[in-house]
Length: 392
Image 1 (cartoon, rainbow, N blue to C red):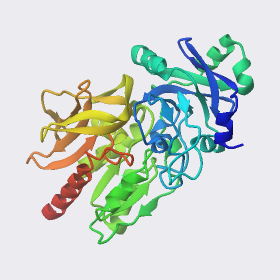
Image 2 (spheres, helix red, strand yellow):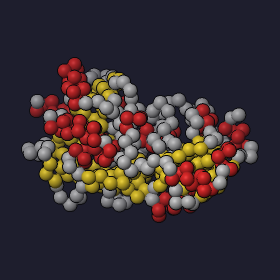
Image 3 (cartoon, one colour):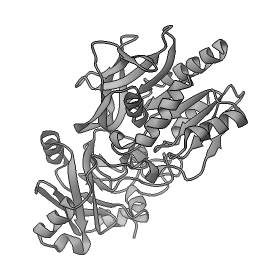
Image 4 (cartoon, rainbow, N blue to C red):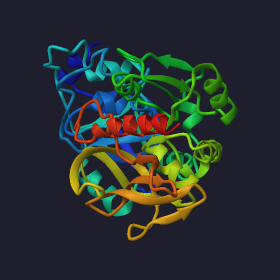
């Protein structure tokens, strides 16, 4: 039965249960059954396919604040990874049928095909306000036979689910084997990208700038990077976005400290920004409800420019905004800050001579669905790699 046919028929009942006991009654959307995860809301008005296939959403139930979802259907070109990663999906008003010339099937058809349990016809505005006031929390979606179970039993299922705080998840979403994304046109640099939940667009944007990207599993070591240096040369290292608590990513932090100690240029995005913060000696903390959407204003403190940016993070770096910090690897400073709440959105590291050696941002300059205000950061990485070659 197609998603369009389902949408035109009476849907089965479903219920969403939050860990604080609040419930929302709605109808089944996508696959039937039950799912558990952390409830988070996303303010994006478009780009739901990229959101659903972003590995950073692993073990999260995404609530869409846009009231009408599914208009553009689903295609085989816009996935950011090999599968949908969200644990569950919550929408208010699902589209009856897709209306894009690029659509190959409906959003609901894809949710069913990949076994993603969702719910629709609930007040997502009320749910979002609840999460803003109470914070992100564990949640369950129950449909089919599960929806008829006693409320106390459903709540027990939710509160028994693991929390995001302390979760180490990068290994669960990372590639199992290394692979190479070839440079387009003339090859200029070789970069090792640690896949902590990397999105497909990231190596493509680097490849478009002449970088040969060697994507490595999350468990890769400094010895693996050294072997890559011996075999192909190594101009820089990149750490990707990814799910989980950065405080639990001790292995990746250790590798990054080796990278910084060796003076290899570094660029990090999202989870990579949090790990750079830890490598430099800063702490991290969980945000109350996080930043998720494609309309977040960020100030680049070095230029004074305000960018509208794409975000997906529930943790942040605890670094001082009003001063530079001395670290074993040089002087660190906060380079970008969110104008909504002063959350650290970027870091940069400079040597004793003042030369830039590493930088990172908390948001997503590679956002395929936009906005593209921050795409210049890939050019900044090129400049960093170029300056290192000139000085070598």
